[in-house]
Image 1 (cartoon, rainbow, N blue to C red):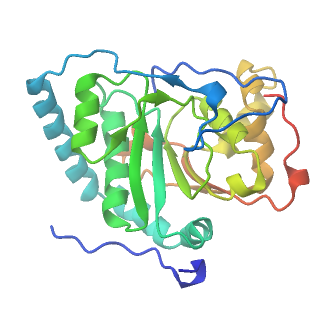
Image 2 (cartoon, helix red, strand yellow; image 1 turned 30 degrees about the vertical axis):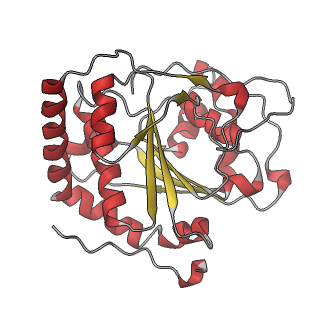
Length: 277
């Protein structure tokens, strides 16, 4: 189905912590991608931080997540968030989908859903999006701090937990939503560097920290150490359509403040200059 024929409709219902990031290499050597589009030089096997699954903890965490999902579902925050997708951002999502029916979702850096509420709120939002928008496909999740119990709960909630640490370097070989609220700047930079081609950037939707805010920070703090790992973020500003979200309520500020949708539309290869970081 062509993008012009597609509408982002809501389905009918029956009813930042712990990241260890490898900074980008400065060489321009050829990089080889696997069939899944992850650069081989930037991935390593991963297992949960502990191998013991506690049934009582698992049951408690499932209940916490169910309460959290219900809380967001009934909130003004979610209704406003969903309406923005249906209106302001709909055409951009259609453009990324193109002739595809589904857009996979990749969640990096979710944090500990057992220990902290913001990660639970963020995950709940992702789950509600998949429930309410038929064009959102499978959800893959990764954070190196996830426990075995958390991994089991994620699977129970319909997500797949990655067994490889991609360090944020998944190539968008097909339409992909990268759901990354409040990740480190290095992780966004890794993702952009891995997709620094016209055909890949146009397949991406990114939900995460505002690139505009990063740019403002750099202009005010020119000697900030974070600048060394933001080359691709700053370079992408010239062809990024950014849509800030409204947190609406203080209940959701910690989980989603300063978050935006980012969609990329470079027109020429010359816009993708070589970046050292």
